[in-house]
Each structure stands twice: as structure tokens, then as C-alpha cells.
Amino acid sequence: MAVENAIEIRGLTKSFEGFTLRNVDLVLPRGYVMGLVGPNGSGKTTLIKCLLGLLHADSGTVRVLGREVTPETGGHPGVGAVLDRATYAEDWNLDEVGRAVGMFGPAWSTERYRALLDRFGLDRKRKVKDLSRGMTTKLMVAAALARDVELLILDEPTSGLDPTSREQLLETLQDVLVDDRRAVLFSTHITADLETIADHVTVLLGGEVFAAATTDELLDAYRLVRGGPADLSPALREALVAVREHRSGFEGLGPAADLAGLDDVVVEPARLDQIVAYLGRS
Amino acid sequence: MTPVIRAIRLDLLALRPYRRTLALIPVLAVGVSLYQGDPRVAPAMLLAYLVFGLNYPFALADRFGLDILYAGLGLRRRDVVAARYLTAAVAVLIAGAVGMLLSIVQSAVTGRDLDLSGLLLVTAAVQAGVGVVVGVQFPFYLKFGYMRSKLLSFIPLLLVPVALPVLGSLLPEGALATLERVAAVATASSSAAVAVLLVLAVAALAGSYAVGLRLYTAKDL
Image (tube, rainbow over all chains, first blue to last red; front, side, top):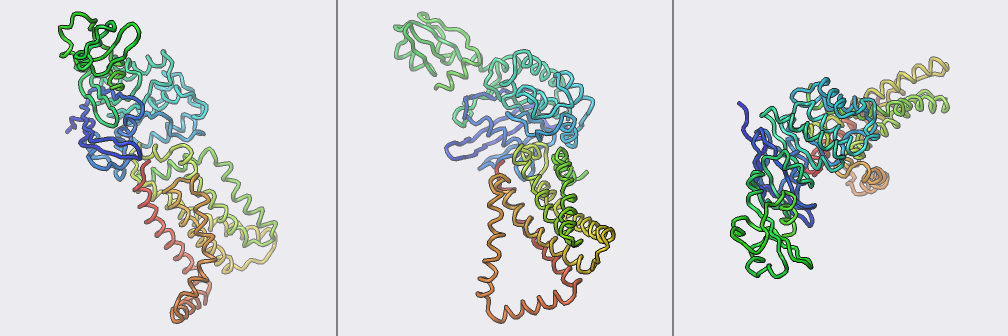
């Protein structure tokens, strides 16, 4: 019987010196893309490492594709990870990467792997150490997708890519999601990518889940407010999540419900990157 | 394919780009053996160089983050640890056999006499030594990684010559006499000595495996 949720995290806490990922709850159903956003040091990579069975949680449970994941169990073989750096032997060529990764996973396909390498313009005889950051990201995506994984976890995959490659990667991810068994967890700073493909967004701030909603709900929940210096009344300042003042006035983010009916200021929909940036400032 | 076999194959695949360097090990062993003029040197040298070869998977894992790859692909920590120890045990046995074969060939080619029971004893002694060395090194590598602990791991070995006389002086006379009697029985014949040495090597690796597994499982990657 198919498992409904690709990821189920309950009460996950993990402490390091100077940082704690605190009491995180997160559910990602199959067939959906979740964007994981937050400023540097908010806990995104720690959360991803827990999902891959790399870290010992202090408390809480992590279930991936219906199975509990801990360092003792190892990661779930149905998961493909695209991390911020490659973890392949740098002297491997891309065929050797395929040989290594192909020993694992539900249904490895060398043909699919080679087709993806071709699609991404990667030469199979090149060595990992000769690839640029963007090429390495594409290689990791190809290796994960050739294993026919059910959950793809991406940690900042688009940050090293030029606009064309970014577009290509996002298209590939959209192709992946044609099959609704699959799910994608996408951690990124480039939130514009998420407006294109994410159904859900989880905002991590200071190691805690600040907001978790569908992308549309999150976009509807906040408004951007702009006005002159005299327009920023104490009541309005109180209502805003965060505000940035400058010589000619102010700009801030607030809950849509609290900003309804304001006449003297400009109230407009906020983009996801603006919401995340202001929430980060708060 | 079992997970341990997969882990061994991953390690071997990681070593593949360095196979030419590793192939120099038997060549060097024979070279030193010819230079020394004693065929019995070949297995000893081969096994001594093997220690560096057995360190390679840890060095590569450390350098390229292969531990994260292995865990991410669904390998359990215990399978990775078992793979490293199993590889070491099999490599020590194979290197011993190959080394003895090289000795026999060298003896036949150079016409030098070769005492086979003496060769077996020397090989077993060096195999036991390698077992103890990697038995000390591996838990350090598993806990701290190769780069951080390659020097640290030699400290216990350097302490052995100091620790043994101290331990001897602390033991009561009765215990010392018993140990001497055990040693006398063990060295009465070369086959008994070989058996004792191999048991020591297996015990060192088994104890080390238990410690290494505990340390590696408790580690955050």
C-alpha cells in the first residue's frame, strides 16, 4: 500500500553549540513540492541532514516514505539528495558516478542517467573534479532521477546556476512531478524559483518553523505597505511584522488582515522573496 | 547484493582511480625483498605496505565526503564499518598468501634456500602485527576522520614498548609466570605460534570493530 506522506517530522530538536533546531513539525504529502526557505543559519541544512539520517536528533521523529530515519537506519534508499556540494570521489568520471550510485535505489536506469547527462550537456568521460558548481548540481540531479527516487531533496540547487541552467533544472523538476508518487523538498534562497514550482512553503527562522502553508496561502497572508515618513503611525508600526525606513518614507510587511482598509498608504501584494526577507528581519 | 557487499564495492570503486599507485605495493615488496636478498622479506613488506592501502578508503571518505554519500544512499553505518573491517581482514589474508607465493618464486628464481615453516611464521607474525595496527587505527578514523587522526592513531602503537614493561612490573609474580608458561607453549612449535598469532590478529580486529562501530554510529556526519 502506498504511503501517503513523503516526509513526516514531529517535534524534531537538534542542538549544536550556538544553534538549536527547535521542535520542528513538517509534513510533505506525495505529489507536492515544498519550498524550505529562511536566512543563512536558520536550520535548513540541519533539517535536511536529519532527513538523510546524517544527524542524531535530540528528540522527535523523522519519517521518510513511511520509514523512520535515524543514523542507525541510514537514509531511505528511495530518496535522492542534491546537496550544496558533491559527495562523489573527485577522480570518478561520470560513468563511474553512475556505477556507484546505480547500486542503490529502487530502479536505477543507466539509459535514463545517460539521457539526463545528455540533456544537461554533461560529458560522461569528464571527471567530477573538472565540473563547475552548476555542472555538479546537474550531475547530482541526474544521479538522483536515474534512481527513480520517490523523494527528491535539494539543498540550494539553483544557487550556482546561470539563468538558462536554472530554467532547465526547474523544468526537469516539473517533469519529475508528473508522477504523483513523488515529492520534492526544495531548500533555497532564490524564492522566485518557489513561486514557479512550490505548492507548500515552510519558513524557518532561528531554528524554528515560523510559517508553514501553501504558497498561495502565504502570499495571501501578507501585504507590503509603503508610505511617506508621516504615514508611519505608532498603530501601523505595531501592526507591521518588520519595517524599513528611509528618507522618503517607509516600506514594511504586515498581515493582510491587519492592513485592510488603510487609505493613506500603498498596500500591495508581496512577493515570496519579500515576505521571506521581512520575516527574516523580524 | 547485501549492503556490506555494496559498501565494499563502493570503497573499491573509490579506490579504482588509484589502482596504478596501489599496484606498486607488490612491486615495491619484491624490490625490497630482492635488495635484502632474503625471500622471507616479501610477505613482510607486502603486508607492511598494505597498511597504507587499507587507510585509503578512510582518506578518500574524508576528502570527498563519501560517508555522506554512503548514508544518503541508504547504507547503514554498521554496514560501512563491517565493510571496512571485512576488507581489511580479507586483504591481510590475501596479501599474506600472495607474499608467500612471491617468496617461493623468488627463492626458486634466485636459488636461495627457503624454510617454509619459518616463512609461514614470519608471515603470520606480520599479519598479526597488521591486524593490531589497523585495529588501533580504524576506530580513530571512524570517529575523527582520517585527516584529523592519522598521526593521533599512531600514539597507542608508540606507547606499546613503554606500556609492556610497566605492565610487566605491575603484574604479580604468579601471573607473570603463567604468562611465561603460555608463551612457552605457544612458541613450542611454529604451527602453534602461527595459530596464536592469527587468533591475536582476529581478536584485535574484533575488539576494534566493536569500538569502531560504537564510535561511528554515535557520530554526526
